[in-house]
Length: 212
Image (tube, rainbow, N blue to C red; front, side, top):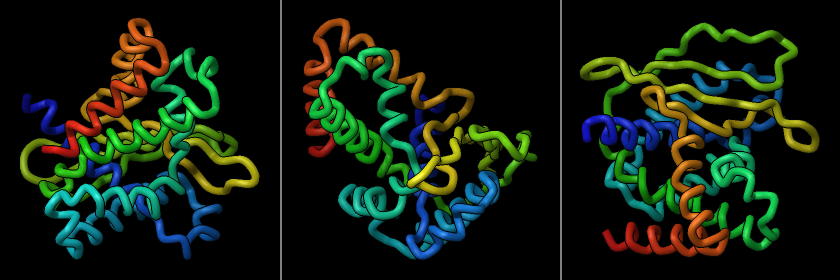
């Protein structure tokens, strides 16, 4: 239970940490991946301190934050496709869109409440192990506050034209990668009920979370 609480807290932390002001888009195109994560993490802490709605776990406010500031810095299609696995290619464009929408809603509603528990933490980045020509990297960090440091790592890819900059497509909290966790769950749903069954299952989970 303690492990799950940590995961929810710092997955929520990640979602806010990914925020980026549109005015900085041109600058971000030439920004190193670890520098981007460091800046976004600092922006996260400042945002939470100044937004009482986010502190209160307001799901609609968090959803707006995701749409406006977080998604532009993520390859969410890749994240969803990786979580769905080999069945992604068998899904129709409409099914793929539904999967992305429901998966996004699931993540936001699951972890929006965790943002209220982010208070005085700081984030320390570890040295980046990557060559200048690398197009995929892992940025490793620790969340420091009360208690032991919490591992929080990011997988990023360098976007190709017309997109620019680095995009986050997976994260690791306490040694568990998000995409791998959901891939196992989604695989069971698809094997039992197909793509539409997974979509319906995600929709029902989102409706249940919205009532809490």
